[in-house]
Image: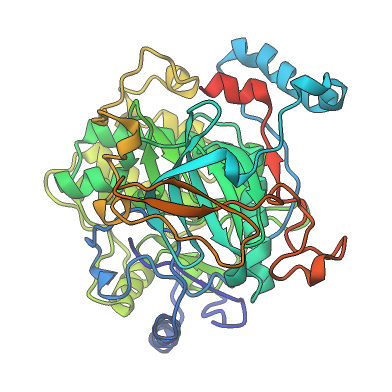
Length: 488
């Protein structure tokens, strides 16, 4: 996985006051300073986001795969509650109204019909799917129902050192709770115990789109058009209906479900736009996919996601990002200075035109800046039925159908992770019970805290459990029973 970097506004000063289509006279000096900052951060023990891929195709992979600089950028904890309803799927109007009613009358339900607050003890750990500095992602089975989920674990001890890590995690949880879209990962539960935070997410059984790209070197234009279309619908929903700048679009963050449809995941670097400030200033992202306005230290908005989409399109069609390099300096220099994209001879004119429009330096002229209709009408997507795709019509068969013989085997995830032993028990935990290990050779002890359902309780960084001072207060979440039942 390509490295991810994020800087505070003061860490790297703005390098230009001109339009994003112009370069400052001292751009070489500023570029050197930016690359020096990246190198220093990389050498100082950077933070690795959770990765589920062991493929090191990126030229920047000479550095630690999947590394980041600690995610120091500012995040906001904003309550947003806007479920997705397709503009084409009028038949979903009734369902939308039922969901809204459900939110207002939840406390009037009979006691025995209210969703029970879940704890980590309700889930049996099966496999490790991915790992990072803050924690890991596990495949888990709900003990009562046998349903499979992806459980994202985040270590509190690694987060309380820097308050912004906590704010960022709370923002990710809020975004996931708010989003209801067929091509964005679903959140079912959020919980915590003394040591960790847990997000119980949709299990995308097909694994990373990046893995299929690495195995096939490049994908056909029809295949790329299909998955780009699903990315476009997901991004447009995030921008317009939820108010989120995604900021880290890349093949590694695009998973496939069991049917082969896209599942956009990992919102740890996303930004929630407010009414008073819809722009961003933090230099953040994965270098190969970062828009030039980010690198130039300018304010930016949703348009950076459309640039990243163009870079992803190029990557999927050719097997490499549009701005390759042997080191970060060469990668950033190409993004900063390239005026015309070089395309291989085998790409059609439609593909070249689409990518060129996304990789337009001026964000206001970039395709996707104003609306989605122009994108939908582009000839590259002539075979896409947008109405059916937006409502995820059952007649649609994705171009990649994952091979799954047993969902519990996690066959489409890297063996580097799936063959890892499960975590040993914590000596400080009030209670631990044995569960089966992924290998089945012997039982491991998974830490299961009896008080894990509490949002306020003694634990790491909680100011001795004083009410109101708990840094993770309000983290817990349980989706409605009707929503969970519909998904399964």
